[in-house]
Length: 352
Image 1 (tube, one colour):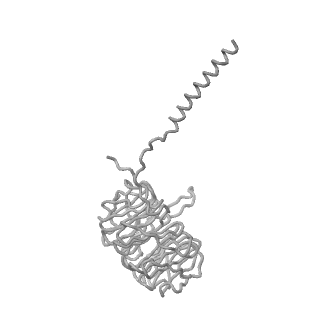
Image 2 (cartoon, rainbow, N blue to C red):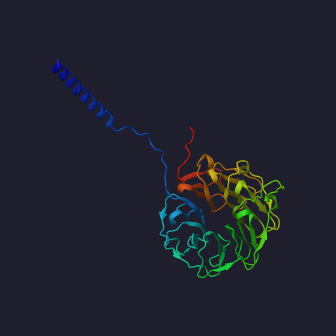
Image 3 (cartoon, one colour):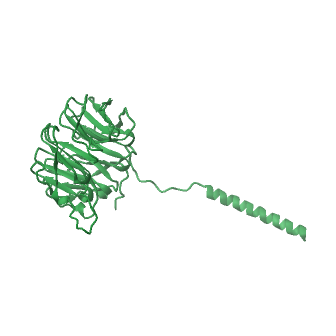
């Protein structure tokens, strides 16, 4: 009996082994994977700025010193070599050949050949630079943390400090010409100059200053992240909590402008204007468009295209614009923000 039991056990074990072998072969068979969406990436890096002096020439810059350039309206892109390794924050081009880039630890880069070569310019400052604005090939400004404002009158060969410096971050700078400029930053900060930065005067938008009672904690005005002046009188700025403010007298009086982003309180990072067309970009793929110089605003529909934050945008003219942001996102419009196309990044699946 013992022998028969052992044989039965052996035969059973053999059958089980054979079955497991076939099962293993079946499990090892490659499984068909669902197709991945056709995402296209010009770069996977976070992008912090875009510059488009005309509809054909575009530069995008960002994390890990990435610089990508297109000479055909965004159809094809090529990397350009940066002489630094730190992150790059903003760019200003006065033509398709001449431009500047600023970034962390006082970085200023310059090109005179469309980015074929980039040269580092020494500023003598190590504070982070978050924004740059050039009025022409020689006259420019850059701003950053700790109240940094620096100025060049020789195309960046030399830089000088302006302003009084303070423990605030200046997020953006815009010059309408070589004399008239504005800086915005933390806690609703606004400064203006009418003499090329020799003197700076504080401005204020009373509509965004919190009204607190004795029972409330002290609060601050929303930080402003972007400012843009189309001339010495007409300007726009945007920032936290869906804030958009405007002036028509050079900033003597600023007023808050109603817009659809206020309800969701998304942060608005960039504002630009070309003619009467104005665009704003911000969190969660949000873009707003105005067709009347910033008086009224509507959503432009990019949240149906991407959910990534959009950190910057530029307008080559009233119809052609680009927006950039998280994970290599690059969006393009050819119809004044009527529609947007994803050139790079993770697109939102469209409903059929």
